Structures are given as structure tokens and as C-alpha cells.
Image (cartoon, rainbow, N blue to C red; front, side, top):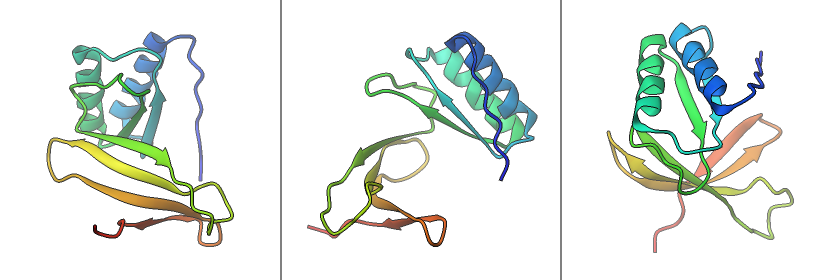
Length: 124
């Protein structure tokens, strides 16, 4: 696995780096952490760049700083379970989806298999 990290000076530079990486298509995934809300133009530029390069873009956004251009929006929260010895158990919820359904999954890192284990929560 190869990882390329960039540490831009500000969010404007981070958006430019992410847009170019998405558009280029040389990487499979671009992860961007933002510090202020994206306006519609910024979000749309990232979306178009991802489409051009065929690359997945993941933007880590603090609660309340969404983007209208996002295809999906997820919320990740920790889950306490005394049966698990590690602290990786989380609940991932899809809270916005322009193209499909909504759902929630309990997610845990499986260190032996080097993968995420996803389990839908039991029905009520």
C-alpha cells in the first residue's frame, strides 16, 4: 500500500491539492479534512474532479459543516460494547444519499484479516 500525504497551509490550498488529485485519477482515494464549511462551488468542483478522474473523494467534515454537493453524507460514532477488547467498534450511518437508500452498520476493525467487519444492527 502506498500513501501520499500533503500538509497544505490552509483550506484553499487543501481544496486545490484534493481537486488535482481527484482529477488526475492516479490514486484510488483522496481524503480531505476541512476546517470551514464548503460552499456549493467548492463542493461541486471536487465532485466534478472525482468524476473526471474516476477517483473516490472522502471529505472529513465536522458536524454541521455539510456540503450540498455531496452525493452521500455519513456519521460515524463510537459504540461502547464491553465484549470488545479494542476501541474500534463504531456505528456508521448514511444520513444523506442522493442515489439510494439510508442505513446503519456496526463496524469493527479485524486486525487478523486486515479488514473492516460490517454488521447491520438487529431490527427492533
